[in-house]
Image (tube, rainbow, N blue to C red; front, side, top):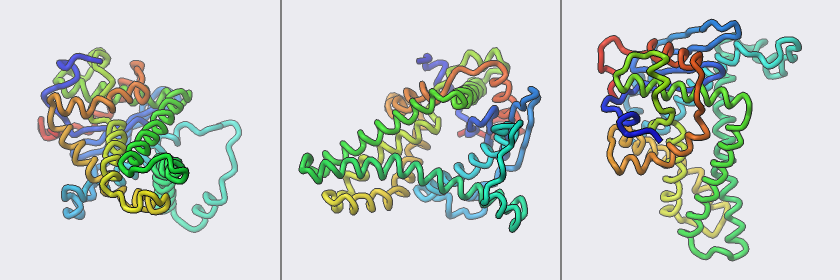
Length: 323
């Protein structure tokens, strides 16, 4: 792991990003930028003003209410950016697939903007549904067998076992994803995003040489957020022990408590992001360790994309993006 002098800069920016297909999305205090390396090697750039939900509806920015709102908002923007980057890399240019029935229906009944909105909405719903099924419903059903066969007689022990099973599934999922050829490049862009942010936070000029020296593990990474969600879930589920011996009641409680878990996790991550001490480093350690799988060393062309994306969203007033 990198020395604290390198990885714990005094300045912390609110700018953050997401790795895409051969590209990076960066979000600053005022703008959102997408930079994609096209097949011909040129950079495709898209910059838009950042539209936050709390700007239109200030009450949605209230602590503990803003967590689920920002989580969903980030997913929507992330899916849009991912779909945009995918447009430059069709799966098979020589043998294009026939449009699906859904695509044909959308093209016939909706304009392109509304059709895109429907596709993004469906993608977010399917993504959330898959995550909930894999990381919450499956562990609950598996540990329900322990209650059914009277192998566990304590709700606290059951919550702990369920949490361990959930984290094990999550870890296996990450490891398998990291071995996929296409994901290796996405995770390399993820590393470039982190290194670029670190370089900027350390006050160094944004050059390939300077960015290359930075660590690729960042404490404010989304991977850490997902891990903390699962850790918080153990505590929340232990407290909400209603009907712990009935699998279907436990499952209902798990699903209904998800907004609460996301709210608590969001506030914890904001606290950790604003402070740097032994306590916050302990909290971020598991997420930093998981980034061994979700980030890879980028090449120079990937770092160039990260630099370009960050430069496009930096505010004109120095320090206006302080966390």
